[in-house]
Every structure is written in C-alpha cells, then in structure tokens.
Image (cartoon, rainbow, N blue to C red):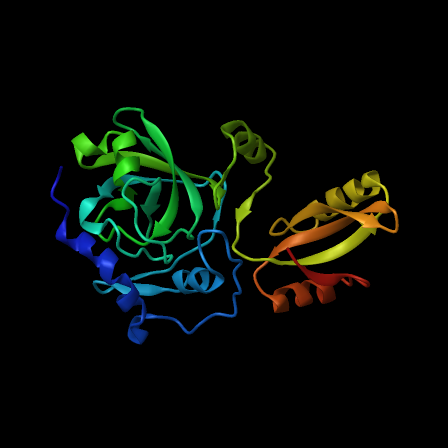
Length: 262
C-alpha cells in the first residue's frame, strides 16, 4: 500500500481551515437542501470559498454530464474513521471521494484512462490539495479502478447525478444532445406556476416553462385525494434563495404564482 502524501493530512484539519476568516467569504444567503447524507448547514458551509496553502478554492455548482480530466489518487487506513467535510465518518470501504470544488453528494463516474476501468463515487470530502490531482478516491473506489497497485492515474471524472441517484449514460447523452442541462443545484426553492386536473394540461405548461429560462427546471407534482381527484401542480425548481424566486415572479409578471419548497 503506497505511502500517502503528507499534504493529504489536510483532510483531517480542513474544518479548522474553513474557520480562517482571512480566507473565507461572508456567509451567503444560499439555503441548501439537506440530503440523507449531508445536512443543510454542512452543504452551505462546504460551498463557501476557502483557502489552503495560500490558494483560494471557490466551490461551484455543476451540471450532469460535466467532465474534468486530471490525476486521481486515493486515501485509506490513515483516515478511516475520521470525519470528512460533509460530517460523515470516513469509511475506506465506501464508494466516496474528495473533490476541491464540486458540491457534497455529487455522484461522479471516475474512469481510469490508463486501464479503462471505471467506478461511481459520491463526493463527501474536500481535496486533494496536491498539484495536478483532481479527485481523491476512497480505498474501495481506488481499488476498483486499479489505484491500489498504480498509486495515481490519469482519469476523467463525469457528473452523473446527485445524492445517490445516478443517471444512465443514455439519459445524459440525450440531454446533452437536446441541450437539456440538468443542474446539480442544492436548493429546495421553487415557484408554482400552474395547477391542473388533467395531466395533459400540466405537461403543456411544463413544456412552456422549459423554454422560459434554462437555469430553472419545470416539474409536475401529483397530489392525490384533492377533492376526490388528483391535482397536477407545475413547479419551476432550481432557485438558490427565496429572494431569487420572488424576483423571477416579479420580472416575468407571474400573477398567481407563489413560492414552494420541494
């Protein structure tokens, strides 16, 4: 088993680094959605700009299908049982990884470009803070793509979903082909723009609002037992804050629209 680079010990001390006000931005108004893995407070905290070894890192939101090429490494026994950036206890046998800027719980497919092996991991930590490295796999994930024997390898990483949900390659390819960007945005603010008894009416509205602003995603939510029949509500999701949603309603003159939480 390879000796871990001493710089990777920064994973353990990362929470303290985040508290260094000299390198951090003021807290944003962003109110992220909690998942079964990461609390809302942790999501907000890990999306703040931070500084390690004199270099600033600015976490960013990503889209399904987005890729990045670089070097992957792995970290194992020395960190097993210690806390990761999202508050989980690191399990070297789990399918997780560390990335410097992508959101916690982003599902990532890692392909080893040197042997063709691939695996899917969930981001739950920050790092690696070594020049040229873009992702640090858990021991299990690293072993799946041959890093246990290679140490490091050239890889391509691709966003394939969020919080345990993974989209198929066919779905990702179709969305890219049809220019349907699926944003991995950690938020639960939306706007209800319509409500219909008939599903067909809701679908028409969904298509209409899909063309209005590509930053936001229209969805149809079915509510049963509403006066004896289902009601199909059309929600426009993806607003980072309540103020952003309010501004959208005003700018587009959406009389009757109101803010919802998914």
